[in-house]
Amino acid sequence: MSAAPLLNVEGLSAGYGPIEVLHQLDFTVGEGEIVVILGANGAGKTTTMRAISGMIGRHGTVEFAGHEISGAKPDAILRAGISQVPQGRGTFTDLSVEDNLRAGGYTIKGSIQDDLDRWYELFPRLAERRSQKAGSLSGGEQQMLAVARAMMPRPKLLLCDEPSLGLAPLITQELFRVLGSLRDEHGMSLLVVEQNAGMALALADRAYVLETGSIVATGTGAELLADDTIKEAYLGVVN
Amino acid sequence: MSLFIERFINGLADGSIYALLALALVVVFRATGQLNFAQGEIGTMGAFFVSTLTLSGLSVWLSIVFAMVLGFVVSAGVERVVVRPIEHRNPSAVIVALIGVFLAVNQFVAMIWGVDARGLPSVFPDAADDFVTIFGAPVRIARLGLIGVLIVVLFLLWLMFNKTKIGLAMRAVANNQESSNLVGIRVGTVLLLGWGLAGAIGVLAAAMLAPSAGLTGTLMLGPFLLASVAAVLGGLDSPVGAVVGGLIIGLTEAFIVGYVPFFGADMLFPVMLVILLVVLLFRPSGLFGTERVERV
Image 1 (cartoon, rainbow over the protein chains, first blue to last red):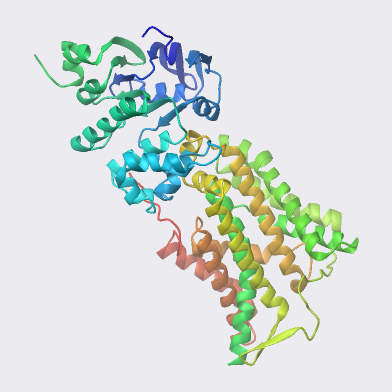
Image 2: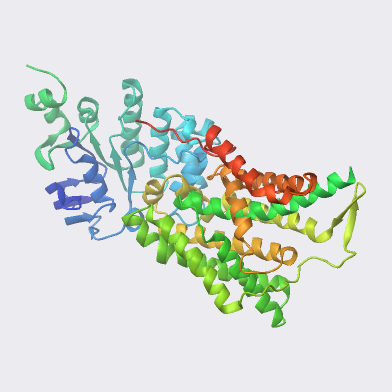
């Protein structure tokens, strides 16, 4: 990574009311990179996502594509090119699959037909179910819909908040394959927070380990996969 | 038979008013989860405004359009000035605040336009001999016009909700505000528009009702109660339910008043109360409403 990173976070602190959840986080996501933040329940993963996308108040520096965005509102951050797949999918359950995608393209001026075609091609199951209500889809399909919806605003960086939550291992595998193809075939950068360490680290170019609001380790996906403490804490492997 | 048809169509006509008002209640409820107690009074205010405009020589249709704009602004203002600031701190206090708005608008109308009843011209031909005969039953054209207005409003709302970007945004916000934020929809603006739209529909309902009911400060009191029952019956979050509920209530009213001798009209509200109780007991989400599943 010779050029400046796409996302550069320095000294990020955030929380809810008087309670600070994140303490001075530093991390980066490079162009075309998948970065995983690994953390257990309550480590601050979701808060990190919400702090970047502007859904909660935060302190510190967040630079995206060379612009300071730490004071920006959610819709401005989205327009700048950061889109989010929220935890629990957050699909519009009463709306059809197609309307979910159209809502995803809300910030796009002009036709979004090409975008719809592109994501229907990557997610053929969604194309089959385009007029069904999103609430009637299976968990895996809803997660795919959430990813497709987040791609509709044509982002440069995709934030994924625990995408594997509540999914069967096979479905998770399929999902992570899709996330990989977003990087490899669509030139996307991804920041994924996960507690499913095994699959996430296998996918990641680089990873950070988050514990009680602070980053305690960092390395490439392979390095962390080989690390004994990581194995013990997140993979349930005891040597 | 012809008497039945006459009552049936009159029921549908009154039901159209309740359906419009119930639609307005549902639009607000879907967006903010609040029952707008001031809905009826904002309509009454609009109807008086129509009266003032027509007296100054404006055509009735145009007066109604201007009054609907007023209803839009006032209702949107209530959302911005009263509902939003309070909701952040205590959602249930909004109910009390909206009852306050109800009283305030009610008194404002009395202050500006006085307490004497006045007439309001109908937008439809409404002379003594303006009726058509349907299966032998004489039906006033103005009554048929009410049903026509409901159909036109429904069609326009359908177009807006299903064919426009702002309609999509309104449905998205009604379904999931957090996710709406995530896809870049300005939720506050959409809520404002929803309340405004409801205000405009409420004014239309009042302006349609006033020619036959007489324009007084209490014009919308009864209809508001009946529309609330209609909205609960249909399902508070279902526009289709609001319309079906409104028409059912209108027909129920027409048949009770028509077929129960002597005290039929007095039975109206007790019967509505029973309908409300039965719905809440056996189908709390209404005929078309989304069933709420509580996960414990």
